[in-house]
Length: 464
Length: 38
Image (tube, rainbow over all chains, first blue to last red):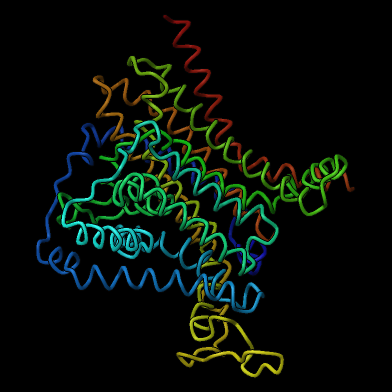
């Protein structure tokens, strides 16, 4: 996936050097910070009103829509697993890798930010869990409570572990994009979800333990769509993040979300391509096969990137703590963690923008021919053309390299300004003194400038 | 020439991080000054 994860062609006609975009972005952040300090003296986001939409709620939460969305989710999971096992083992020809790594993993992030928590409706594991729960309740003619209550200390830790394992599969495992590997991973993940739901209840596990549910739900909080007491409604964008209550493991989860994208970008940088062979050689010298040595090397790189992101955030938090207010590091790290969600979105959007635009088109071909066999295959099964799009090719002209660069810089700047706004709003909520709140935000501004610089440097490393 | 080319490459990479290093330096200096003044 690394090979196809970035832009296709170089950028040659930018008016200023790429690094100067980083400086300009930092200036935008500083100006935004000053504007917030002057023009935003009271918390607004957490106090933003909710406009209920009962008509839309009736439609979206109706039984037919609920059932249809669940069935679509389960159907797509089945197609992914079946094509992964039975189809061609060429990654780009098979439905499973492109669907999982591009449409599901990246496309759903964009849909969540635009339309709210759409994954909840299509979540195949939740749909299966609810179906089994309904059958059990009907057979027993009594409520079926979960055998265990979800432990507070578990919080988002299972979700963080799930996203980390998925990132490791994508970025460290040598055949992580092989269709059969993707199918096995989907089955293993499914078993984990069913065990979690059986122990702690379907909704409880989905909301806290299911990595993908938590991941997409966090991005959905950026959107203006919100649900309160079962009613769908509208709030200003980011307002749902201002209300977000972090759990144990939420900070590491965000570090995994940003760190995994960071490593994917840094893996193309000379700093990594220079030291990776040395680390791999070391592991080979102690008896590992070349393949395992390389996998372990990339796993270490992934963990290091996550640790750097975590460490940099905690550095900002320690700085904010140093200005006073009587908060512990843990309290402040949880208070400001929601501000990392727009940054995580900026990283995903900027880093994978071209991949989604280009490789995402392949899903039209793969939907018609999910197994990826040739139309006429003398050695075995022939391919299909279900929707008449099996011969469609990817149009690389949908966006030029320079336009893509401006879009990516736009995502980075907007995401970090949104993060700064959230952190400022939260500081006004938790600090009793406005001056102290602003002083604490100097450190969060440093964090935002740091993540902005890192994001633009990572983008510059693609196709140097 | 190779040495110069490498140095140029590293300088371009380092240029991305000048804003954050500069900002952290300013922040650290400000904090230090505030603590000294009481």
